[in-house]
Image (cartoon, helix red, strand yellow):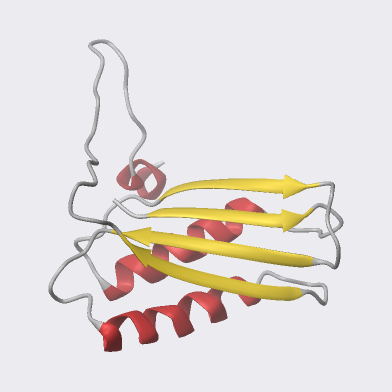
Length: 122
């Protein structure tokens, strides 16, 4: 279950939902076991210089080695920049979870949780 966080200066005209979809698609094209990419964005009104910082957090897995990470980083950067229409400073960080990181799904009876498959079929 990857996570993506986008922090950006709020003078930028960014469609974060398109970027979320592009990052999720790129991750899953490179690793079908990744699943839904929980995404959130933080526009910032107090900044110096127009910039965006994207952090992608992934679980540590044996096949996610240096070569995988370098290739994924290049592909994610390309996917994101296709949606950026202004000049800015760009940063991307891919990080991996530590041994004691917990991630799972908490389901409440009578409530539904949207999944990646819902986006495809709806």
